[in-house]
Image (cartoon, rainbow, N blue to C red; front, top):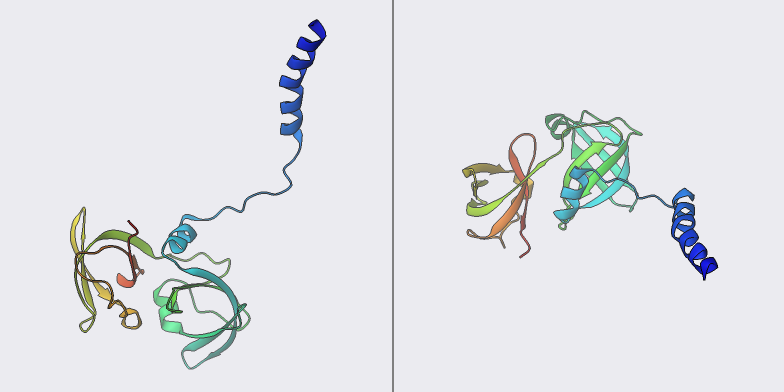
Length: 176
């Protein structure tokens, strides 16, 4: 009887201590809050490399085989700096295959902000929208290539992605 109690007590302390001393074989990669926000917005992360820089544009060939041509001026405006041929790039692509954010891999830059509220109005022809938030109504300019929000109507609960220039670059209906 005493032997059984000794074995039970030993198993309560020795086994957990042994388990805690064994290093884990796999560790989770930490994900930044910016990456979480992009993933929640339905964006996919794609890695690529600048293959050409010419006439105010640069071309990024991605690991998926797709090629994207982007403007240098947008890169500068977003605080990412101008890339050079051979620079590794990180692109965030939305469900419409539009590049929503891009940065030189390993180089810190400003990331878009995500704001939630009720869509008060949207005028794609004038590239304007108004979002009603807990802080009041706010007006945003729609980035020209992002005016594809025809299925989102006033009154919808949405989360918008706003770049450093204050432009709404993406809109997603909130999941209920």
